[in-house]
Image (cartoon, rainbow, N blue to C red; front, side, top):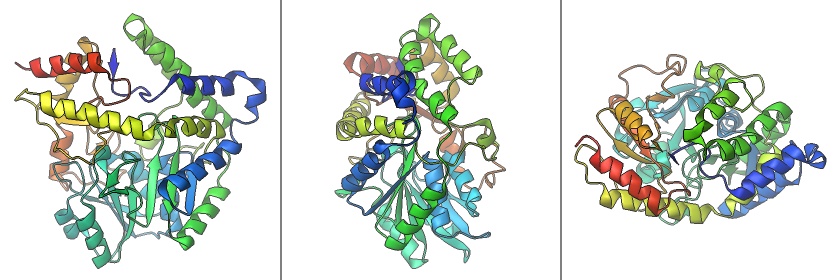
Length: 409
């Protein structure tokens, strides 16, 4: 089987680290708090050359705390692109702001022209999302933000390690936000971080981080269990592994990427929290390979862009700077191609199959008005992801290309 998601970054060493925290009694006291949190914050600080770097339980919590540090008030408008995840909308609302959605361009990133049309005298913050690791139109967006006195948060959930004009994404705005979720550039199953050069903002973020409770021991264990669960379930997927994983999920043995309450726009009782030490230990290991993994993704994307010949498929715009976290193609009937691929042993991705994803989210709770971002809605109705993760080798890419080029012909 070939997977686009399902914890695609996990290595054997990650599995050993997770099992150590799960099985060794002397590690149990270090599940939630320990030296790895300081270690990873120092490594991120050095990587980005920023004086202020703080970790959180997730990217969504990091974004919420970034907005709280900016002292968002009721009625303040936060400009964010459509074709995003509901957890972004939730973070804005839970920080006290109102999300205002901006349409996108063909590169899946914010349209500067539509941004200008959406700005009002209540606009306070601009969130610039680098979708699928492709840098947004930073020069134009930053210029517009400066003209309207908007504070900039870069959403780098997809773009850790990506450079624009030789400068790392996350360092262009006032705050950079990162996610270490299961399918991100590097993954500790759950986690997030904020970086800033601004002393005043940095000190506020630090205070907010320190006020958070330690992560739930149960939730930490549930997420750690994903490492052995996927290590067993993925190789055996065609021989009962899919049912094994489904049962674990149904019985709430594994943690969720997005909980049902979050899809409904409601808070969960066990987050926000601090980052778990066990996850930080895994992230320390993952971060060592970030440049290698991003380069691998670029090579896979180059193969797709040069060897997909199917005229029924629209390829993403070429961008030499993108890390192509997922290689997103546009097709007439995404559900059909995903089902057809699954029969061939290829599980494609569905980011983003809705203008506010996942598709079963309550978009009214996200404050989204239908038809307000028509291009984003059109793109969402056609999007399918091809995998670029570290497990994609020559044999797998040939199988994917064979399927894609034959599809619909």
